[in-house]
Length: 157
Image: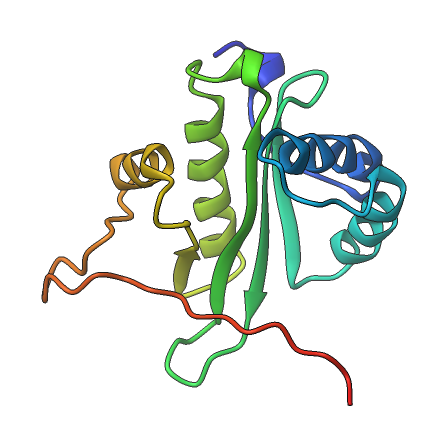
């Protein structure tokens, strides 16, 4: 990986480019997206908070990892969650995603997070292999239990 591809912490000025990538990510996998304009506004807002950061790589940006840190009663410094991870198809298999993930974990630790979580859909075996290569196994190494994240969408009353 050459220097222009080196991962860095994103700024709110990167929001529009990141929004284009996240919109492309959802379209690539047939998921709905509110569109780049909406996402850019949301990213600008989120990246101005200390609880959200992104790592980007490429010039122009072709890989990103978006992370939020939440408080937790059991973990000092909170838990960092990799909300989004995407590398454009033409830039995959070059090490950008791995470099972004490594930088995201390091930045979360620098910000004081005590744990780093990643949510992966069960059928996405390529992502499972990728994350396992970077120290995130599908099974708890101590117990052998499979990891699950359960979620329910909420609506305001």
